[in-house]
Length: 186
Image (tube, rainbow, N blue to C red; front, side, top):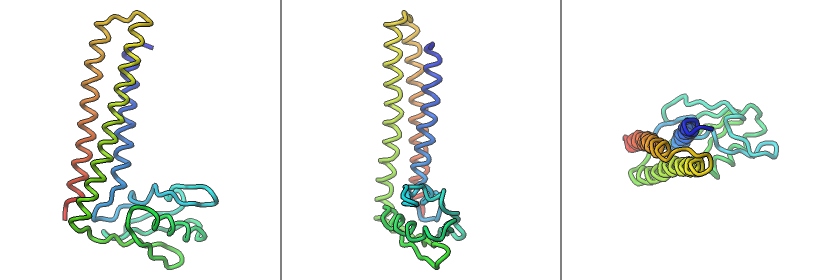
């Protein structure tokens, strides 16, 4: 595999890391109801942990309410249990067929706590990107020694790798900044 292919593979991995970060950041609660808050919540269904999105229809009919309609009403207790044991701090209201989650307005202290959680998730995303860069860098050095790739080519591609890394770390920071504004908006 040529070094250029290695760089292309790394960019694909960076994109996946950014997508994972976006998905992770979407689960951080803001003052508004969003189905993404609970979609990936693990529910013990039929003896197997399953994401809630596979077990129920999830809507946000009002700005401060999430409506969960399980496909199987027998799972309502399991869904309630998963919501209560999550770190969302939400209390499910059930009427037999649907579960309603009322999203309370966030106070200033809770907003600050959520921003801290957000910063941790963004930093984890940055670390993932830097780890991918390090692995690619190690592969480049190994190819330089084993297959006789010139040092100049490796140096040139290392510079490209660093520019790519910087670009994706900036993307991670922008995702975090946008979400932070959303959390702190009253």
